[in-house]
Length: 439
Image 1 (tube, rainbow, N blue to C red):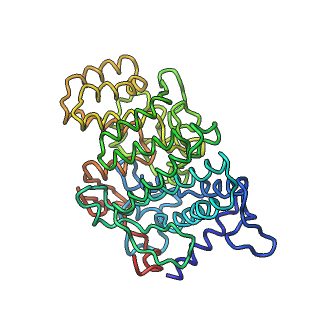
Image 2: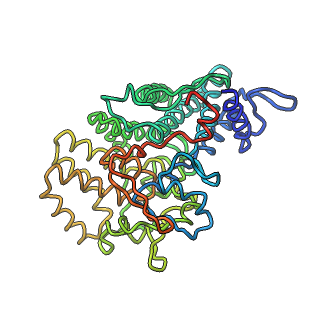
Image 3: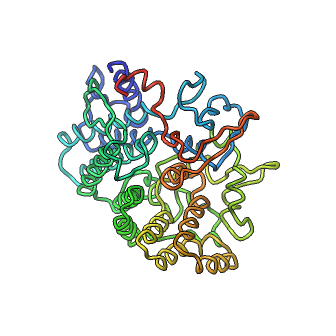
C-alpha cells in the first residue's frame, strides 16, 4: 500500500506545477502552504488542468472508430482496441488510475484544509463548491470506467472503485461498491449545490463548474441511474436558464466547440490529438448518417482517401463536458421511460430541427410521428450515436443500453467484444493492482 500512496504523492506534488508551483501540502524551505482564496483557486486550476484524458481512450473500445495499423502510436494503443485489459504488453498505454487519485488528493486538500484556512467569502464558497463538484465528477467517471453499469438491484454488491476523502497518503484503499460510489457522488453534489455561487462561467473559464453545469451533471447521473423523474426535473432546470441550440443550417462551428452557444462546461478533452491521428471513423458510424440531409456529417468528418477522419475534435477548442443538446436528449429518453411518448418526441425534435436541412427535418419528423415507444427508444440511441460522436459518451451509452457485439480488425485479425461481454467493465490497470493488493 505504501508503494501506491508514494506514487500518488509524487504525482500530486508534480501535479501543481501549472499555475501553483509554490504550493505543497508540506512546507519545506522556500515553499508556502496555500491559505487564501487566491492560493486555493490556483490549486483548483491545476486540478482542472490535470483531469485525465480518458474519454478519448474509451472511443477505441467503441463502434465509432477503427485503429490504423500504420499509425506511429499503434503499438501503444492497439490493446485498448482489442479490449485486452490484462497481461498487457509493456508498450501498451493503460487507462488512467493514479492520475484520478492525484486530482482527488488536491481536491481533498482544498475541501479539508481550504475550508479551515480561507476567510469566509462568496469566493471561498465558490471554490469549495467547485472542488466538491469536481470530486463528484471524478468518482462518477471512475465508477463508469471500472464499475459495472448502475443497476439498483445489484449496485450494493457490484464492485466500484476505492473512495478516498482524506489527505492521509497511508490510508488503505479498498474498493467500495457501485452504490457507495454513487452515494458519495450525490453527497458531494449536495454540498456543491449548497455552496455554489456562480450561475455560469465566463467564456474561457467555462472549464469550471457552475450552477448550470452542476444541474447538467445531475441530469446525466439521474439518467444513468434510471431515475427518470429526477432526470426530467434536472434537465428542465438547465433548459430554463440555458436552452440554446446551434442551428447547423446557419453556423459553421460544431456544437461541441467550447464557445458554442450550447456549451455549458468545457473541461474534457474528449478527442485527443494522439487518438485522432491513429484512427479512422468506423464504416458503421459513417453509414448511420444521411450525408446529404444531416448537417452534422460534413462538420464532424472529412474524407481521407477511401476513409474518413474526425474533424470535430483534436484541439483544445473542442473541449466539452456538458452542452444543452444533451439535456434535450436526457429529457426525451426519460419522458419516454415515463410513458410520455408524444412529449418525448417533441423534445428530441427540437434538437433535430437544428441538425437536418429543412427537407431532411420534414422527413425525420414524418418518420418519428409513426414510431411506437420501442422504435423511438432505438431512434434516440441512434441519434445519440450521431449527435455525440467522439465526445466520450458512446462507451457509456453502450454499457447502459444494449452492450452490443462489436468487432475490430487489427493487423488482419478479428477481435470481438461479445454482447454483454464482461469487458464492458474495464479492469483495474495492472500497475494499480500490482501496487495495491486490496484491488
